[in-house]
Image (tube, rainbow, N blue to C red; front, side, top):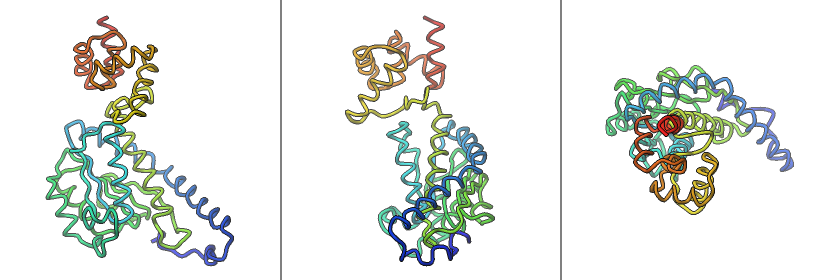
Length: 296
C-alpha cells in the first residue's frame, strides 16, 4: 500500500531545520488536496444518488476506524448546526464504539462482526447512505459494514487512499484520492486524512445544497443558536430581501427563527403564506419566492 511506503527522501527528516520539516509537511498537504481533483466526478455522482435516497427520509451513516472514523464523525456533527440536518438522521459506526473517538481501541478495526452488527443494529435499509472511510482501503470493520449495508439495499460510498482495494470494490460509489506515501511513513492522519476531510466536506456540502439548504450561497437552514449566528441570520435576511435591520429582526421573530420563512415575511408575506409557499415547493426558497411573487 502506497500510504505505508517509506520514502528515502525523508529518511533524515529528524535532522532537518524545523522550517524545512514544516515545508515538507506543507507540500504534502498541498499534494493531498490536489489528489482529490480527479475524484470530483465520482463525488458528484455519489451526492446525486444520495439526495434521491435522503429525500425519501434516509439517513447519512459514517463508518470507519481510527483517524478515518473520527474524520467522519467531525463531518457529520457539523451538519445539524450548519444546515439544520436532523440529528436523528445521522448514524456513526466507529470501530471500538464511541470511546474510540477519543482514544485508540486496539484491534477494533479488525472486527468484521462489529462492522456487520453496527449495520444490523441500526436497521440500515434502501433509503440510507453509508459512507465508509479507510486510508488503506483494507480495514475489515469498514469493508464489512459496507458489504452488509449493500446487501440491505443501501447506497454505499467508499473513500480510500490506495487504488484497487477491497473497500473500493465493496461499494456502489468508490472515491479514490491516491495520496501516496506519507512524509512520515504510515502516518495517514497527515496526507490521507487531509484528503478524506476534503472529500467529506465536498460530498456532504453538495448533498446539503441539493437538499435545498443553501440559497444564493447562504446557509438558509442554519440554526441560530447563539448571538453570532442570530446576527448572521439578520444579515442574511437583509442581503436576500434588501430590507432594513429592523424589518429583518421582526421577520425572524415572526418566523420563530426559521430563516426561510423570515425571508418571505420580509418580502411581504404573512407567516401562513410564507409557510404555505415553502411547503408547496418542498422547502426550496428560490421556488417559494417565485411562487409568492406570482401570487402577490
